[in-house]
Image (tube, rainbow, N blue to C red; front, side, top):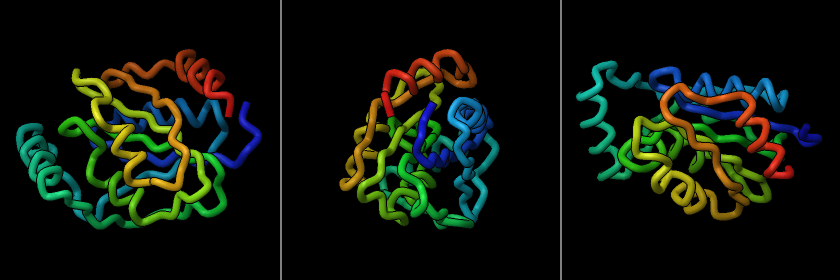
Length: 157
């Protein structure tokens, strides 16, 4: 389907974004990379929501266990849950710690009801030298392999 080297990088707190990433991997054959913060986020929903809001307000970019290596890839799918109308803070760190010059970013996100909001526009702002394509947005764990296949085909990568 895609004749370029593909990486699927994702951060998943509850497992929804991971499930979407795995479906994308099954369609593209790309390599999976899990973005992991050095310090685990709280499991309690309300505590997490409050922390995510604080991180957004203070533009926090938490340390990761591994910043990844995107050098050998032409197309990088980046997946995130939507936290406070944008990408999760660990994804911000991943984008700012890597050089996306000349790369194609294919964003995807999972949300609990608010849609993608500013997620994709914010990715473009952080990765100015990359081309950011149309994203795939799915509610919670409803990512569908057929929809993903159509989305990727329509992107004409």
